[in-house]
View 1 (spheres, rainbow, N blue to C red):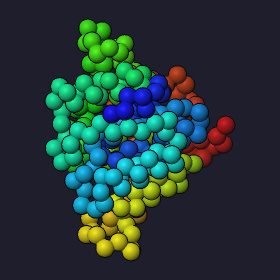
View 2 (cartoon, rainbow, N blue to C red):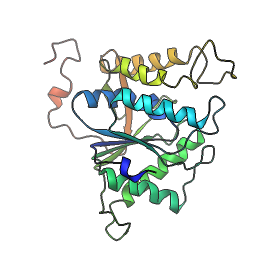
View 3 (tube, one colour):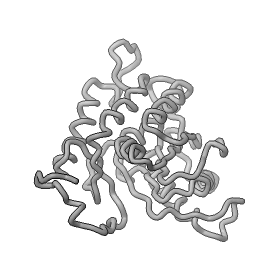
Length: 248
């Protein structure tokens, strides 16, 4: 990790592989950026075990996707694709990223998601975010514990703790995903077809966001799972417009 690339942000999103953050919470990040919030992305692996493309190409694609979403920075911890490391050294790198970024909110993959690396990443990020707040864990950086770690699903359809309206940012999410030309559907590609490169994969992304959007009575939504429910200062405002009334 290039330490100088990590700066303080309000939200820090971790992805097991480049493109997972875009898949799971890209719309939310783009929506928050449009409102003036700051976020950074930390990829835990280079995606070197992917069937299509190369790690070098994927790094360029990831940089372009981060630019489209509005990220303040994007860095990669290179913890090994296909058998993501969760040892003490790996944990220390995540602690370091959290302490440098000092986010209020951390976004991490859901532990029940499809890929085994997502399972490993979920626990790694959750644990390290807690340990980052321990004053006696000396790393040369001041301790910092985020207010909360919440989890996104890149593939499985999980029952959400809360939903985020991404109707206005859904096109930005898709544009960021399209930056990964090596990974997703390309009629001119001669590489083997994979689960994510199939022609119908993007149809599934849209169907998922529309299904979650119907729950919230909006066009598109992303869902998140939290260990504790968020506290609403104004539950009336939270449901404003749900039954078709005018939103202020």
